Length: 307
Image 1 (tube, helix red, strand yellow):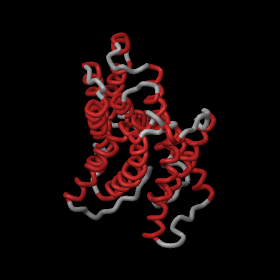
Image 2: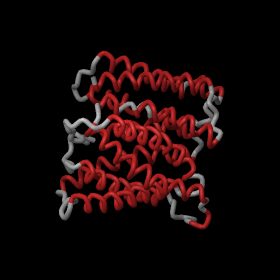
Image 3: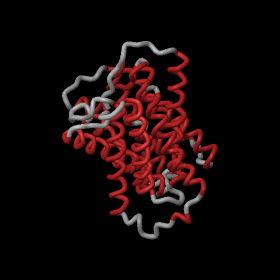
Image 4: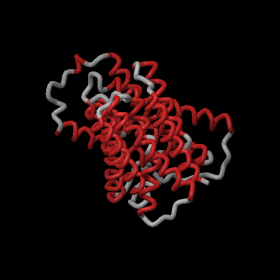
């Protein structure tokens, strides 16, 4: 997503406060999704999360910016629908289904950490010439993924995750990267908050439509939902979507990008620690080695792309 930047320098304390919101909240959303899918239909619940979050954000935008602030063209609606579907339905939908089928939240977060690698690959395929650090980071990052999903991890059951569902997460990161890449090439609302409203709304509807096709309305029983799942849904709506994304958009406008994008390699660390503490997900040697190598590759890509 392309977000206009400002030359104003924000106070360091405010920058770091917002950055830690993004670090902790986005790192914790993988755990929240794991609790969510314990008893709630994955795509219907994620889709409703984004629809409700978009309504909250729309009210805030309308209140702050006045009448007409949410007006967009048909072309911008179509662009937001495409990007929202790729980011939310393709990206986060894949994570929800994978976690429902046994992929630990920490492992999912480490696989998603490869997102900047795919983004760099797409840039290279589109004709951009990446820096040397970016090329090295791509190679190292994919080596980390090979360790995480490779034969040794699978034969030893070291990650406790089925390979097919792990590959679905990787496919989801490719979908997210494609959506991010297209966001600079499609007509979209220029205001980042208005763009977010429509991407969450339309992406949420796509998630719910796919959930309907999967038969998630069959046996739909809110009485069977646990308090943990309901709290996770509420957390994802208010904290994960509205608060954290607002903090992220503000950071992109107000802080150095090289600092902002450190979330890409801090989030998986937070996710692994929370998964271990709150869901007893094992931290194995393969997870540590593969995760460290992947995060190192992402760090090099982020530095290479923002220097």
